[in-house]
Image (cartoon, rainbow, N blue to C red; front, top):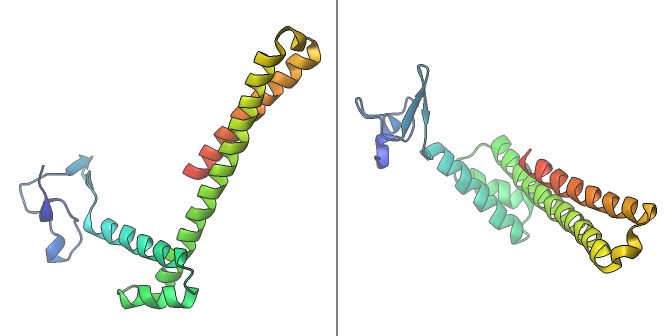
Length: 150
C-alpha cells in the first residue's frame, strides 16, 4: 500500500498524477481505473461539508457560510449545493432517529404484550394486535434505514 501521491487522483494536474508502474490503492475495472482509497478531491469535499456543518451548528447565517466557503476557493453555486447537502443529511438523520424510535418502541410493545399478557392475549384479537405491532415496528425500522441510505 502506498501513501501520498501514489493513488490520489488521475486528473490532469501534475500534483495528482499516478506514478507509472505503481498501482498502490489503484484498482482496474476493465480498462477504467478506480481508486480504493480516499483521493485528494474527495478529502477536500468532505472537509468542506464538515466546515459547513460546523458553521450551521454554530447558527451562522447562510450568506456567511457561503462567503466562508467561497474564501476557500469554492464557486457560489457549489457552496450553496454544499449547504443544501448538509441540511439534507441532517434531515435524513432526524428521520432515521424518528423511525428507529417508533419502530423499536412498537417492537418492544409487541414483545411486552406477548410476555406480560401471556395466555390472556391468545385470543384472535390479541394475536392480531401483537403481530400488527411487530410488523409496524419492523417496517418503520426498515423505512428509516432505507431513507437514510438513499
